[in-house]
Length: 125
Image 1 (cartoon, rainbow, N blue to C red):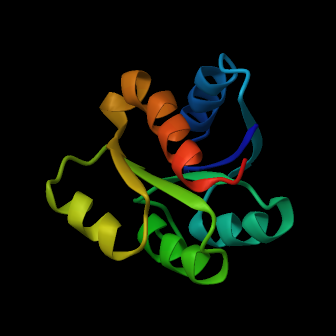
Image 2: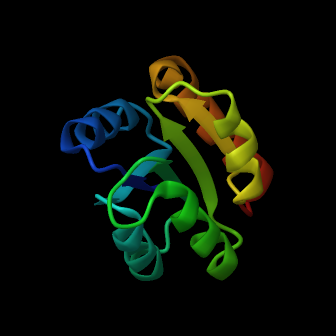
């Protein structure tokens, strides 16, 4: 079972991701956060295996939150996502310690396979 924390400031997006992931019996959404600070707090409390993190959020953006989370919990998988088109986000996400980067428009076809690939390569068992 892959335990997932969904982090995005848009409630509709979080709900859509939850609906998408509920179709996979090996994935369970254990929590939702609306900014990077809440993501850090919930990571400590919920101990997810994987965090799906938006880049552009208030209070603390996804890049800053990813760096902080990877420093404290290096075993947690982080997939960064954004709706803002930019080729530089892939390089930036690599530098902050994210395991993967996905544009939001590609999530419908690529999210679940990417989650399984990363979990198989990273998680024990």
